[in-house]
Length: 221
Image (tube, rainbow, N blue to C red):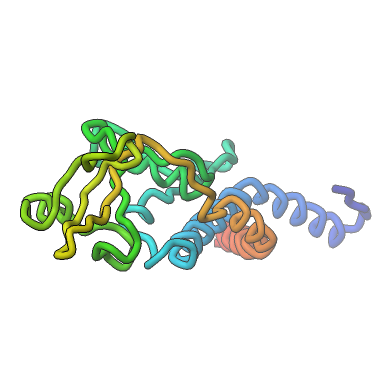
């Protein structure tokens, strides 16, 4: 910053005011960063519905978090995904796959196989998932359904829940033969956030104006 000074009292006062105003920059930056972080996080929680079938569960959205900037002397904050919430394991691990792509694994350590409904063969909810207890309910209907690998077929690809039909044929309705599977990125959260960074100057301008105005009122008061 360069300031052209004049020995006249009026110019000196302007210079001093300018210096004092710039002292508000760290505080304004802290306020602007937090404003941008929270507004962008709110946008992400809304935008994710457009990328997932049926929208995102509230539990999924609650994993999108903000680490706010604590003070003007430590200007660091971030947007991040919390992968653990209610359990002693990463019960929101799938959120990493949604944001980055990766490998789908069973949702709990006790479950060794993935449970994948076959499209069009079993009823799922609006998000494409089995409703809670659906597998157990169907498996208990022994006359119509059975679990395992049918006779005459070999390999874990044939492990699942099968439905018997009146004509003697069988069809797999839920696959349970895989321990993991690859998945593409579904929600480009980082790219969306980066595009919204173009709005940061607006946040800073508002925060700076508010900080300077507040400082001037304190001095005058």
